[in-house]
Image (spheres, rainbow, N blue to C red):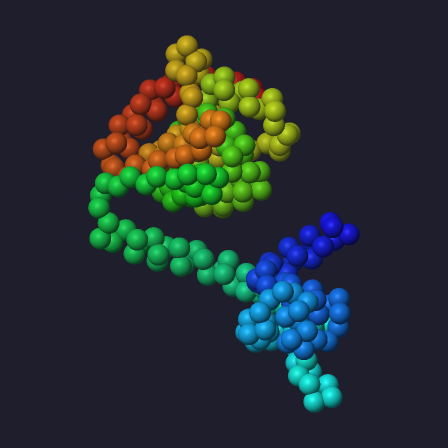
Amino acid sequence: MEENFAQIHQFLSLLGLSEEEIKIYLALTQRGMLTTLELSRATDIGRTQVYRFLEKMKKRGVVEEVIDEHRLMAKAVEISQLERLVKENERRLKNIRELFPQVQESLMAKVGQNQPKTKVLFYRGKSGLQQMVWNTLRAERECVGYTYRRIEEMVGEPFMVDWRRAFVEKGLVFRDVFSDHYLESLKQAPRQGPCPINVFTGRYICPKIFDVNMHMDIYNDVVAYSDWYEDEVFGVEIYNKRVAQFQKQMFETIWKKAKKILL
């Protein structure tokens, strides 16, 4: 029962209902038609607030008003109405996906206006690292860098699946150098399908020559450092052409010393 309740709660939340609105909706499904006062008592939400939430829910199409014996009551809509809302969300999401490539280019062009040539951005936590990884999709052609451990450990497998798909669709390529820390993390990882070798290319370097103990991505004029160790999860992006050029030179030197190995 608890699992079913959690699924219903998650579903309603994804439809856009707030915690209070979910309480109201569930009260209506469990008890049938209720007045504003009855809903207030059933949910422990103030009567005035219940009225305001019901107005929003009516506009969203999840509750209806019914006049019963000269009383104004609320009732939950039929399940078929919820299915209609699901389809509307699907259409809206499809439109967002179709518009995003054009909007992304326009927004990125505007973001670049009146911005200093050099800037440093600091990120924390899982969401911060996800943003940094997603930013690599801005690469003009190639992203290079160093892989400390499987980034999925911090940003999650589903996120990386979406990122790889977008990376391939944009026609980008990635070269990285890794050492023993990465190989150790692979032992604890679930088996994955092979990555396109013409897109993702990696080389191993002995830690005695160069120990890769931090994650770094280099693309365009950006150098992005990230690390997750014990409770510390953080990242830094440096936007500077000279810094990026210097790190790219360093990478090419290390790349030549690194070797291809079978993973």
